[in-house]
Image 1 (tube, rainbow, N blue to C red):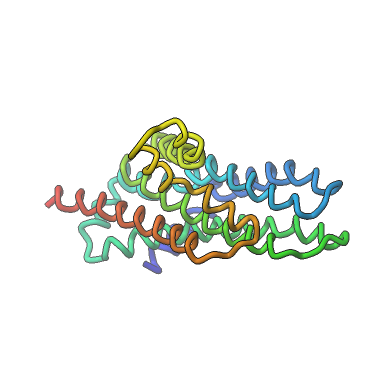
Image 2: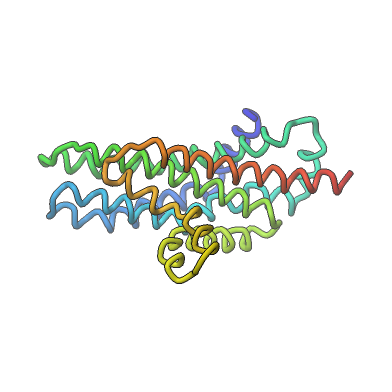
Length: 234
């Protein structure tokens, strides 16, 4: 897992992918941050929600090549026929994307630090907001690596990832239009409703368990997709 993690990290930072995603994210986040300079500090948590929405479009770009590129180049044959555990392969790739995401997140700390420098208070809402933001991003990455596993085309992986995350982001609104079991399913996939409690500074165990379970389910499903190909190659 460590070897795969290091390989993916080198790939990210030896190519424009990580720099473009991080740069675009910071550019857009900075644009949305500017109004905070004239308003109260608490509004920055609204920026975290906006930054979460940006992840809907940027995370699939970050993850689209993780597995699909290996399938297209044929490198996946070496991986899935090797004695390396599939869980190590998937976790190595997942942790690499998550590490890039953490770099993005760490760079955004400059925004609240600027506000604190100008006299704004340091609140529990900010801490809760960032914890929720990290869990939200980790969940998005799990979905992104899954969509990368189901196709060898990076563009398709990115588009399917964006559409999937957008549906999950809007799940609460869509659930109101769907009766019965469909609404229940959409509510389970609603990542935003759990995030709101963090954004209010409420650190409850339930949402944390939900996000960790969500991540585990998608990583397990990704492993099963690759496992199916391993058996088909027999």
